[in-house]
Image 1 (cartoon, rainbow, N blue to C red):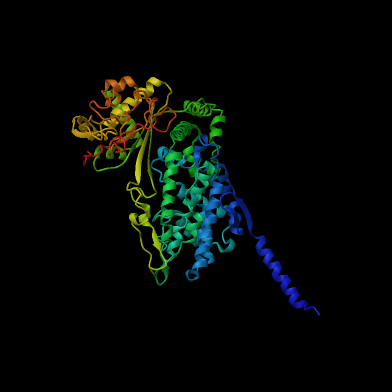
Image 2: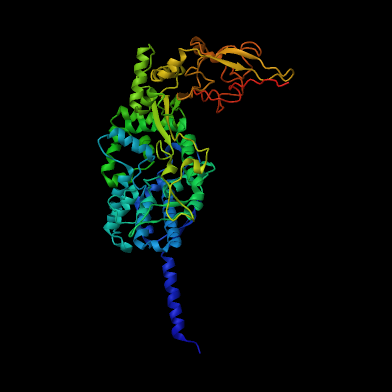
Length: 595
């Protein structure tokens, strides 16, 4: 005889589990696979505030150079939400004594999901636009995310849903900022998950590095699964825990995360064409601001919600009934972008801060406006004619997330022997990790495609930089002497020593590099100018056995010799300014015969 009571009970339990399962949705993601979305998460996603992220490109103008880099802030936000939950679940499984509760999951998930809610058109480009148009307004997309989150919850009546209260939202905003100072009673490690202000290793970075690399077709060296599977926390006080700690075996994986970030900035985000389009977009927004009041939209939430990357089309379609000159200029700039008539990059330098070059250190601290003003003043002082408002400068500092500090020095590690977390020095991880962690890149552009104007801007910029590089000028005034030795003869075994006078290394000499100075990307240097300056780079090289040993020299034409052409990544593209010892330029020691 069948027990109807137990059968009905099993049916009720089965129906309840099916109901709970039906309250969750899953979305497919090319990076992380299936992403589980609970009810509260679905309610936040299904709002105009969040849906606008579909129309915000993650990489701004980069898709104009890398066509496949067209992923959006929408997919990135879902990926960050997934990784945040995955990290919490992993800690909870490995360390149940931490007692991660539903409130922790709710607040961390809400912060991860909405951390980019306040981004404007073309992402970080809009931040720069706001700082220029309204410098007195302390505006940031992080603060704007908090404003939009409050309006989202109020407008769609989500307060109280799944236990969401005002204190939870206040904590979520702090998690977006990574600010734990006013929330000392909360678990310390949850502030390191979304926006880690201690060492900058968080799920936001892990997702965009993987997602950007995937869209750019660049192999990423990040090991997200390995890192998340090895993270732990340790007790610091009877009622609190440490920040996130990683296993010592993942130390080099941690370094690769920072190195991948630097690599993407170097290769993609600061690409000269990308930055040229950025400059044109910025000029177009500033020109159209008087008529369209773009910078005022941040004060009105309903208007700001409509502000997406479609702003470019809005400027193009604007009828401009009053015939505003700024709007006409903005439409012309956008048309030039469409027709690929871009600003021309005349030069690019890379500077590293050093105590040996105090002048260049001052150049690093200058703003873009100050460099433009300095180039124009230098041109006037040297009789070089440059049209007004023709010089554009883009300056950025490329680092590994922690400015001039090795970010791995700020990571806590653990192993199976030591009961307490600890830090590792650079030599413990790898002897090949560099000692320089930041560089300054200055790109000079012209708002014209006329070759003569570009050459004049290039010359004025070189003179301007040279006025700060005092060390290079002093070096050019001396002619030190040194002994140089030819390799041993393969026929007689004898060595031939000559007293060769070394020519002084000049700042803009295109085939040598000078320590602690700058590196120029001067594609348009003319042979006549260099010959007039007396550059030793273009002197006829001595024949072997005369005054100099046989060493490779650069051809007078930057496009000839050693295979360095205009499209190459060497030679004419990156003019050298640092003298690096190598097998070609390092004197070999004198070898004496023993017989």
